[in-house]
Length: 321
Image 1 (tube, helix red, strand yellow):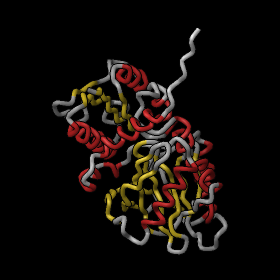
Image 2 (image 1 turned 90 degrees about the vertical axis):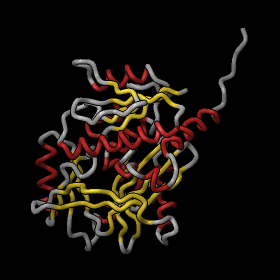
Image 3 (image 1 turned 30 degrees about the vertical axis):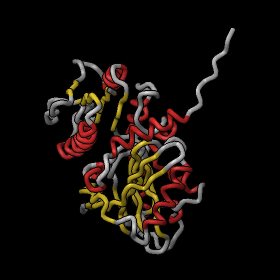
């Protein structure tokens, strides 16, 4: 029986967060936990803190020791389990650093180089553009571009993201916040339907699980906020699905090391079709409710994808002295 450690950064005591962010993190934690418990053949330990909801039996709650850092806590728990499934934002290299705390043989998720690349929004777009994939960079010199967005280069979701109608104001915003010490990105705002893709990735496979619709709010100052995501709302029989499946496969090929559950945020542009905004090398909010919607246990499939890869690796030759 495998022992699995589930760690979601905010609900696991990583840092204090606004209520809506904690609730979002907790919902992802609970969705993963529920899928694992339904398997019935895994011992599941779940990181929690005083602000998070109770972890139900038979899952086992685990908490950091007083003064223990998130990195030491994850390393300690990972060493005591067969597998570790970690969900955390890429901000400040957090997800990449957490991945380094876990033995690669225990890690359920994307490989380190893929996480590091996806952590930089600008480098991700440049890598995808070099592979011939449409990104906002293609709109930088288009007359139709009338709005520009400034956001943390290593941000998650719509946090600290601001929309500008004037390119000069966008550059001023980018420059001011960059000087303040935060790596920022500025790029054209792509008009169209905000969508996301949920993928199941292995070394040689990339399955498009669902096409989701994202809902964002923009306040009077132009600041964006993530409101919700509707999972699996566009069927894979939709005319756009073939193009989106091809896009997913091309992103998977362009960023080696995407593994397990991966998200792609994109805009469906009326003329150019799908335009990739960012790649999320981890579980996203779209995981919540997706197993039920698809009639599949995604946790089982993530584990199976990893096990298939381990089984397919050639065994090291033994030398005889």
